[in-house]
Image (cartoon, rainbow, N blue to C red; front, side, top):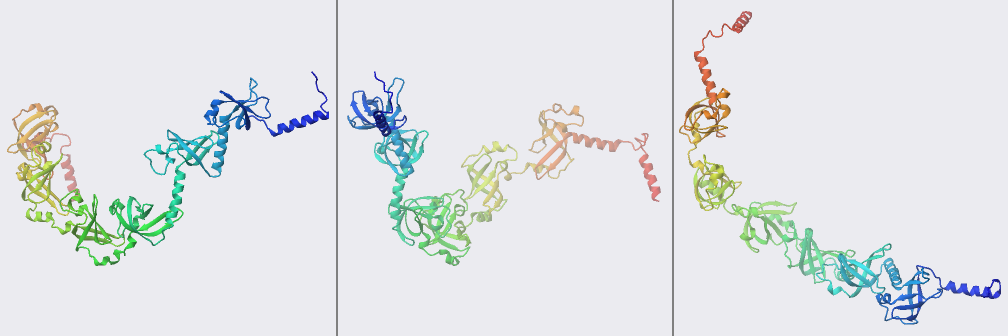
Length: 576
């Protein structure tokens, strides 16, 4: 074998030049995408010739199938592959067609993202939180969140799967190789272009006929115009009168005329007004007076009242509390219906707040005044139990549509209020006494026990320290229960009030039916309270015995017993 050592010969220099020029055309580096020519196709592999490599790399047919090129590639055609290794441990060249396609696809996505261009993709499948989108040009897979599929909620997206359509790239993660796209931006952009063309048809001052109420919020009402655009009527532009919420005035589906008052070409919004279609009715509010009766028309009914109009455009609220004298928690729709003409009295006109208050009940006779004239406090009246709760009865009084309040404590002087309340049911007829009438507050208080003589009157004329005779009813650890003679009330003499000597303060000393004396230690007619004490009786008796039977000379032999007298005498002499 001949070895060439003379590298300076013209032939060798020419060969070196040719070799270097060939290598400079094909820069062979690992990690780069290079073009190769298909030389042979078998059942399992595709052979690719790449100038500059010592051997032909092979590509698995399955790779070609996965990228959808199996039927397109033929011998002699070029194919892009990623050169992973120039030489592995077995001396073979490792290339990948799939990775080359992904990298090329990523480059295209990056370019589209930087240039803010849309791409063509198709939804291939659903996943958690959204859908998978395939880039049609490169086969790259991207994620589209559920919120970015459409600009409005969709019940189903089956009609979108497999359809080629435009997507906007909203996020790229180069490190992880993830792409996030949006169909919603494309849809909204198209609608924006269409909306801009529609808005060009309108100008400030135009009158829109028969706009349909589409929806409302706390700040205004939305109307649909000609089935092509939505416009807003702000809360302040609905009526000259004060409006708390659009649903007080409008119902979904109603038609109204609107006046265009503003157009925002940047936000693509049209502002309209209803009140500006008519003159301000408050300009002649002086035609109405507080305290006078007027006919009003019911325009809308809510849970808390009726919106009425004194004249077209001049609205006012008839609150549910001003509909009836007697009905509580009234339901307005049970009394009135839209279109009714009813009589009302104006109770307030506030020009600053542009508010008018009216009352319907003031046009009616106050039943509490009539009742007070016929049944003043202290009179008796019949009624029927209309309802009851855990602490009171409500009595519908005679022919009046008035409920009297009967507290459980006013049912009986003697029995337990809770037990007494259980004796009554709805519909029972009772006779009661009128205790109190508050016509301004629309309240009547009645009582049942007041029809009987008050057993507490037994104590009239008696005072503290008076001695009374009582009968023992029962005894327990707390003391003894006693009842004064000819009195229906029971009283407890507490254990500490049985005797002066603690050893004698035993409730067991007494037996039921026994008659004993006791002193009144406390009496309060306002609170209907009386306290009895045997101990006080003993103290009073001891005091009386001492004052009656003790000797005037007793105690004289005690030291200093006369000291006070001597001191008193000395003081008298000094004063003289």
